[in-house]
Image 1 (cartoon, rainbow, N blue to C red):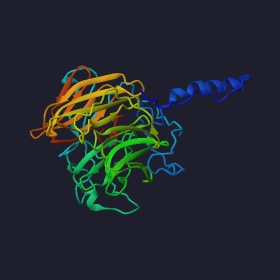
Image 2 (image 1 turned 90 degrees about the vertical axis):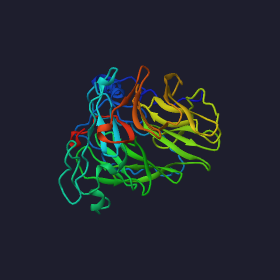
Image 3 (image 1 turned 180 degrees about the vertical axis):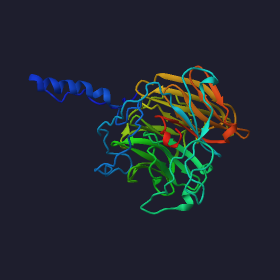
Image 4 (image 1 turned 120 degrees about the horizontal axis):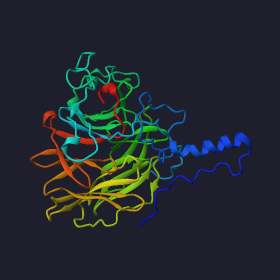
Length: 403
């Protein structure tokens, strides 16, 4: 077992015994502070900031991040206000009809899933009113990008989206087919284009007190602050590697790649420092040139990771896929269930620490699977189209666009 993730040292800023009422007040403050903090720079994910929004900070992104080396994970911990303790992460599904939300409750069986509902995120072409159907509109303000508007982009239909992730503040970040990544703030503010031109949206992380889009293009992973569109290279792939998946939560970023052998999974801090950790006890290499791990998904607290393990036929076609989840620090197993048969491909995966949701595709079907240690269910998405991608809303989506 390799070294574990670095944790915050015990908070002890007062080496001398407090004296008088002032000292006692300082001591009480120090004792209460850790309860308001998340881990490794991630916001506390038991909260719903109904009026909060990411704030633009005076400091720019840490300079000198080229390939993920030399950065630090000692940034201040940012916590969101307390929210509903009974919130169960909703499922966000991108289909060829739009972006849908499936609310769910605890328990087992199909009764815990609500009917999928489409979100209305944009006006129809040439109008300032939201499209009919779905729920409420996210925004009708034109796309903002360096004070320039792009009416053609604003007028796109919801069915043009290929990926969508929550922004940790009640909003959504989604990618349209031609590559533009758009941010729909939960406050109902203006729609913005974010990220590096031509890059693919992989996930939304949280670093240096603000949410960031993690995108990839041409062997590089970029981190882009949503509030001001500042971008830097987060990590660069080695020659012969191909990026398979990126997942960020709890201040930890998991990166899965394929290579001439059987691929690998690396872990980074939110600021780009590679962590010396390997929670996988047994990963075989049965088919060189084909990745053993196909997808990864961090739990919201950053303390566990779900992943798919693929076995292959001799001709390289997927024979079977198993869903696994382990604790990062100990490697203790949380999940181990079969999730795909011969010809099935898992194209998208998310994990809430207990339950995983996956997009499973074959030549005959495309379906959303929800799996935990006790059960596996296939969601009926026939009413809202063919699924393209899936994720969890780690915090409740804002009612400004139907969340």
